[in-house]
Length: 135
Image (cartoon, rainbow, N blue to C red; front, top):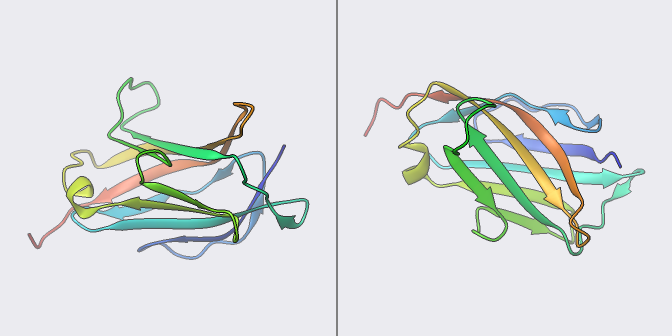
């Protein structure tokens, strides 16, 4: 199953065009010491995807081979919200977490999981962490 990513908006990142692939690749910039928000809409066969019964998770790591996360986000820890009406996935990383990231660049992916435990990676890419001057 291939979801389409539309209305992809990340704080401090340029707008990007819609994409229909098995997994969309988006390289992002995160300003350390600020709140990071990311939102996108999932469609399937040209319609808003029915995300009833889905959960979501995302991992940010320094490298693909790392066994521990720099940040772990999920719908269960409140850092990812699934909006059933708009079929949007909304990620939220508070300032206190972006502030403590101590690497210049990392990798991430975002997955959704249905009620049958089928997992779909919908977005992946790199995250560049821009240093903060003001504290």
